[in-house]
Length: 524
Image 1 (cartoon, rainbow, N blue to C red):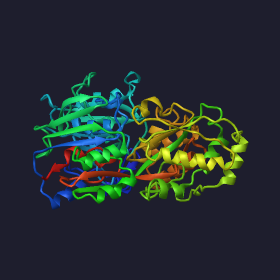
Image 2 (image 1 turned 180 degrees about the vertical axis):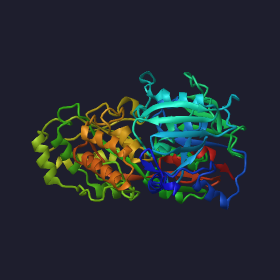
Image 3 (image 1 turned 30 degrees about the horizontal axis):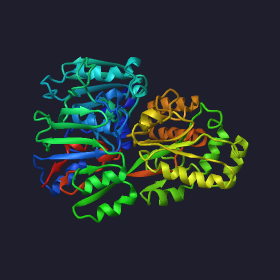
C-alpha cells in the first residue's frame, strides 16, 4: 500500500498514527475552535459593542514585539494584532490558521502552505518572506527572543513557492505544528524592527498602546476569517490586585477578568449576571532555588525544601480544591506523557530536618523567599512553609513584594523566590523553554547534560511508547534533582459578565489561551 511506503525512514501511516496519537494531527480547516463553536450553537454571534478586559499583569515592560513578550497580557496583544501559522483548540491539537497546511514525510522537513487572501492591517499581502523573517529573527542573538531555544532547532526557513515555505529542523520534531502556535511565533511583516504600530494580520488593529497602562484595539474589517471578529473595540487594562479586579467586574467597569482568587468565586457566582469559568490546566506556581547561591544550590537544601511542602494543605487551603497535587516536575496528571510511576513526594518533617541539617540550614540565616500576589498562591505557600520550617529549627522569612514589576525586577533574581508558569502546549515546548541547560527561562539555573540529551532525542523519536519513556525519565531527573518545587497544578479561573458570549476553554492559558478576542461577542 502507498501508506506503507517509507519516506525518510518513517512511513506516512506511521507519521499519521504518531501525530494522531500525540494529539498533533494537523487539521486542514481554519474555522473556529471547538469550544467557541459549541458556545455559538446556543447563541448566534452578532457584531458590535465594546468591552474592557482586566488582566493581572502589566508593567513598563509590556510589548508589541512578539520576540520580547513574556506575560499573559503580552500574549493577548499578540493574538489580537497578529496571527500565527497554527492555533490550538480546546484539546491542544493544532489547527490551521494563516497556514493552509503544515505537512512532513519525516518530521524534519516541513512544507507550509500559506492561506491566500490574507493581508496586513496596512493592506500588504501576506507572503512567504514575512514568514521566513518572523521565524528566523528568533534565532538571532541580537533579537534576544524569549523563544530562542525553540527557534534554535530551525536549521533553515526558506520561501519555496509563491505561497509556500519550507522548514528544515535540526532533528525531526513531530511537535512542530504545535510549536508554531506559540504566541511569540506569530507572523510580522518582513523587516519589521519597530513594533509600536502593531501591524499584523490579526482580528484587531491597534488604536493605542501604553505599556503598563492599557491597550485599545479596534475591529479589523479585512480580517481573513469571514464575519470575525465581532466586537467594535477591546480595551485591555492591568489591575494587579485580585479584589480590585473582582470589584471592577462586579461594578460593570470591566467585562472579563483573569486569575480569580478561589476565595472570590462564591462572591462572583452569587452575583446575578456574572459567572466563573474554570479550566483545568498545567499552570503551576513553583518555588525557585537558584543554583548560583551556595546554600540554595545545595542538593540537600533543595530536597529539604521539597519535603516542607504540605501539598494536600496547599491544594485545599490555598487553592480551595481548584488544583491537583504536583510532584516537583512540570507535566501534570492527565497529560499523555505524565510519569505515573514516579513516587509521589509527600510532606515529611523528619526528612526535611535530615536534609536541612546536612545542608547546614538549621539555625542559620537564610535568604528570604520572594513572593507576590501575581504568582498564584505564592504568598500563602511561603507563609505555610515558614510556619512549618520553624518546627524543625529552620528560619524562613517571607519578602512579599508588589505584583507590579515582579517579573522584571525579582523573578529568577533572588536565591529563593516563586515563579508562575503558564501551561505549554507540549512537553517539548515546556522542557525546552524552562529546563534545557541554556534556556533563558531556566529558573533555577539547573543544568543536566543527560536531560538535554533526552530532550533532543525525544523530539526525533517517532515511536510514541519510546518517546513517553524518555519524557518519563526527564520528569524523574527534574523531580529528583531540579532546583524547583511544584506542589500543585492550578486551575485557570476567569470571570465574566454573562452578556459576553463565545468564551471557551483552551488550557494553555487564561481567557481561551489568550486568544478570546477573535471569538467573543456582546449579546446585550
